[in-house]
Length: 220
View 1 (cartoon, rainbow, N blue to C red):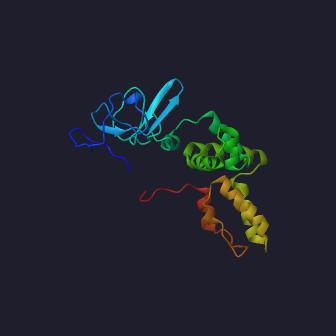
View 2 (view 1 turned 30 degrees about the vertical axis):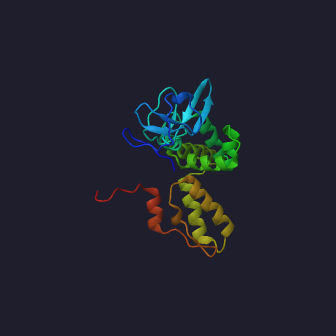
View 3 (view 1 turned 135 degrees about the vertical axis):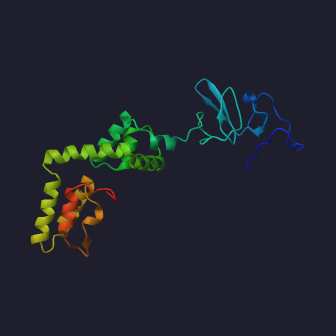
């Protein structure tokens, strides 16, 4: 555990702070611009800049001891939070979404589009991208285009479901495929199609009506 000594704190006798923190070595204790004493934990070259890192952040040219959300990034901003909350899509996100809509594995899609080599990292980042609203919308838009080309729409899906409900005795393979269509189309909750011990239980009239009209907020 690393600590920060506030101005006026008594320092251990073995500490001898260095004034020039940008030229301090890893392990040196230095005085920051806010007069706090902190230890240098990292030195790293970023382009033509030499940065130093502490338990509160990464710095170049000036240093304080205010804790950053991301201590390994010079901006101090949590990159994952930026990715999750950003509204504007990037070119790579568009390419990634096209590959996902085409059925490619998310990890493989990420490694193909982004300059990443670690599968573990790609797994984590692809999962984060798929949780974002903008990438989810892109994937759904790509899928909608495919559905349109095949003539698959909400009426078609409900019609197939009704045909199977009325006439099929045991069509578990087709039901599994149909369930995938429902999930991909994203119009009706997954629970609306029930498959118990391989037998399709059908969709009620109320569920069919709910699928065709938007839900109104409560108390309206």
